[in-house]
Image (cartoon, rainbow over all chains, first blue to last red; front, side, top):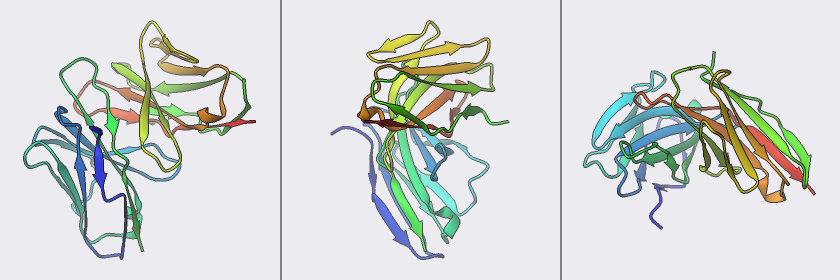
Length: 115
Length: 110
């Protein structure tokens, strides 16, 4: 399977703890996006990378959130000092930008529950 | 005003029915348009891109009206397996800008 993979699938943590999620994009894709989705809402943009460069962060992304894509391949999203409001599905998507119409392909997501 | 707006539904239709969803977008400079399907607690999956001339894929037809800034998805001969949430997605072509609607929930009833 050469799709987007995310790990872990589920994460339960206590308020105040730090969590880190990993995303492995489709290998030939140069862009990688992080989204957050809560029940009844569409995915909400968090940040994206083109190769290893983080090109944009949402204004909604507090400084407790940080993302990296050190070698332009996999990416990690870290949330420090988690809050109950951080509970959501965190989705990663990748795309091939610059080769025709850009389309997003999503991983299965990481469901975060903050107790 | 939201970038992309959809009627959240729910739409409950009998098997075999035809159902249509509409979506409006606010940025007239938007360049590409998509419908994604999302099953409960799963990731969104690309259903189809939407082209200016309209396009069809089996029972699914997508249309774009740039003048009125709306996109539609028509599902003919609904199947039980079509039950899902359908997300309208718009890309302005600048930077990251994929905007998602909140989704329209469809349940096909036997």
